Image (cartoon, rainbow over all chains, first blue to last red; front, side, top):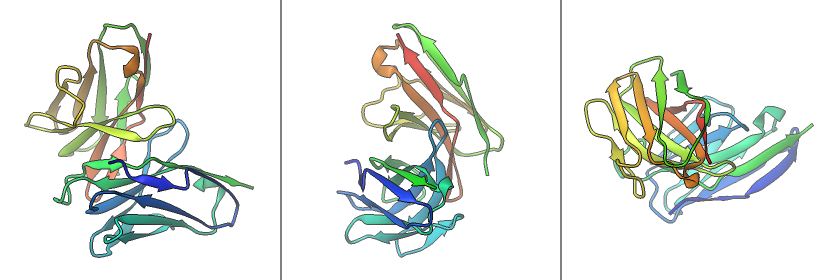
Length: 113
Length: 112
């Protein structure tokens, strides 16, 4: 039931791009993306809603394919501050706004200078 | 954005005892959540705590083991009862504001 993220881990050089995928076996109603640095709380990055609407406050983009039950997070021109573990959170209820999420398996990303 | 604090930040407890974790938010919020995260692992939702109603527990979590209180719109507690080493984990509270969800810093619990 837990969404599967790929890759499990990735190492980049500053300025390189990365894509993190989140795949669910169940229907997706909305998808959240979070970044968690070691020893810190997860930080909200973005939400993607059915119909393609996105809401986020960082220079990171994402896509949401309802049919394929997948979401992807695009990190372009990566910076050292992008290092951390990325989680997708998929809403487990068809009633959007319940905020009950199943979190994905996680992707560890490290950006090197 | 909501600012969330948790107490204690960490604790080491003996098997069979209970620990109450406090979560304080700097603004009034309707929906609060409790999660568990094993080190290096993903987050698992324990329960949803809305003010004025009983907490709603996810599969695998029961009220006798994880009683939750939500006395007002800025505060909640999670108790981990009759602890065993399997309860060693990081416990996080979170709140929803609009489309965003904010997490507290977590409580690192070690059960010996």
